[in-house]
Amino acid sequence: MTTREATDVFSDWALRNRDEGMEYGHAKSVNEMLGIAIPMLQKPFSVIDVGCGNGWVCRQLETYEGCNTVVGIDGSVEMITKAKQKGSGEFHLAKLPGWKPLQRFDLIHSMEFLYYLKSPLDMLRIFFTDWLNDEGILIAGVDHYLENTASHDWPESLNVQMTTLSEAEWRQGMIDAGFIDVKVRKVGLKPGFMGTLAISGKKSK
Image 1 (cartoon, rainbow, N blue to C red):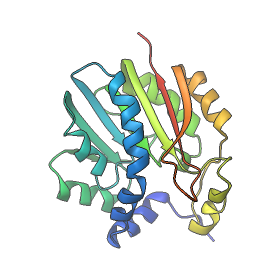
Image 2: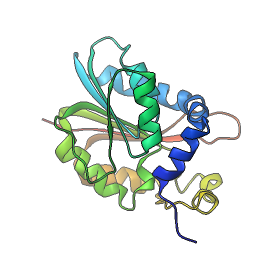
Image 3: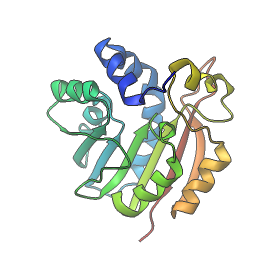
Image 4: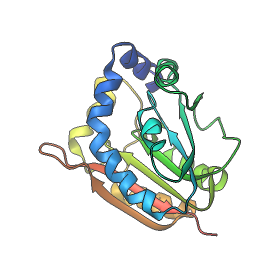
């Protein structure tokens, strides 16, 4: 059987309104991640949400004091359609790594995106080199990682390519990309879920 594109899967989910369930399911982890990253930023600040889905994180970010620019990007046609219907923000339909923003950002936020890439660590280098301002922050959450054995059957059950990396591999990937103050921690902990792996780092001057 041919492996499906993750973006096609997410478009199917959007058509079945499963994007709302994703928003509910990821909210705890995302709120903790933003609680880590936002206090580290100078004001005003700009943000891009990578894998923005229906734009719910972008709409939340627009309410933060000092946030003057919010951009969302996703490779799913239906998710971007929903994002544009639900809000007036700036959203781009594009697949990575073949797209680059016209500006750099103070914060890159991403939830449940990176491991769908065949070379996610290369994407970290691209984020660092081409997407972030000096002293900018990257924070990315992944639920599919080596230590989370409950996630190991996801590629087969969804018939989607996923790259399975360990906590140590994510940490080293951030360091190799050039980030400083790299931290890898668990957020969104709840019964039956060992947590989202939140990967963060800073670009020095």
